[in-house]
Length: 395
Picture 1 (tube, helix red, strand yellow):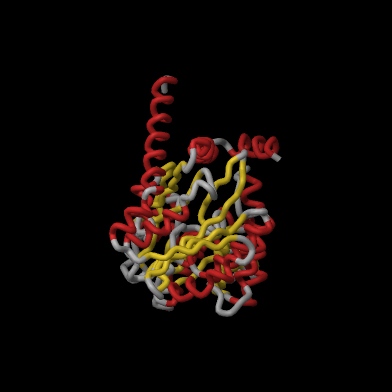
Picture 2 (picture 1 turned 120 degrees about the vertical axis):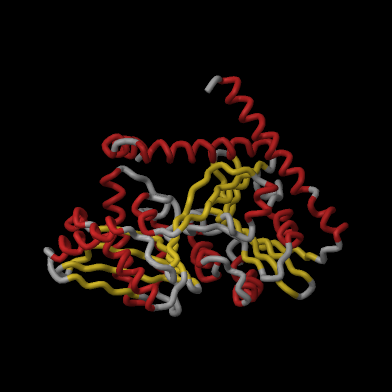
């Protein structure tokens, strides 16, 4: 691309984000004129989760946590991880009279000389959104955004992994720009299988090959019984990533792995582990989150001894049967839409990363967000050997 065209594109994006920022900063006056009775409270720091808990749990109990990753249980452990990393939880709450309507949780981190805001829990969470009461209106969301987009708190906002059907998605479509877009496949558990005859034959072949290692056994674990299995999944995934030279913001990071492990033990826990054994050894394992009628795939890992026998495909088939038996509605495979996911999926949902500049210096964050997305795409296309070499240089 010619330099002048690239520069023009960057200037256009900067202009768009500055316009969005101006719109956000004038939102308060517009809300007052509309008669919205929104009352805004902002809490931050080590006590933020405790102060936000009553409003958060009230909205969550009314069905306001759209996914497993907006629940208070997950956010509490995520906030602890942020604090260990010297990042600041900052939670905006909107009330309408005596009713809590919106909780907009973010975390502040200083990187490269600027303070950036992102969803609280990022990168642990797989979907970002607000917590919104069923009766929350766009005016309530706009009131929350007015406090979130405060240039006194941050110069840049980077809100990742927002589903197209998220409560906050329409607001971000007007107040931020899209810096990356993916698709998250899902299986409608109640529908007929989406797998074709050819893939069904392949699945039967995988089962036969795995059975050569010994008897196959599938189980689903939760609570204290799942702790050892989650540690095993993390260990297998770490080795898999290292062998391919692939980075991860969660796997191998002590703070985020600890947050995940802390979510495993309490009862009730959102964590489930689907494990397939062949001859008494773990061949494939998946750590998932349960929320309402949805199983969210989170970490999938296959053992090297069984890798050529397709254990992940067999494990997913067994898990789907389990989901049907438990009367779940959706098996969410999450982004990216890899070919093996599309094989069993009934459809996909767009998932976008949004960014907004709050001050002129925020363009540094915007440039970094765009570069990071491009670098990830490039990295996935590189040969494993080159990726490993780059990872060694990075470390």
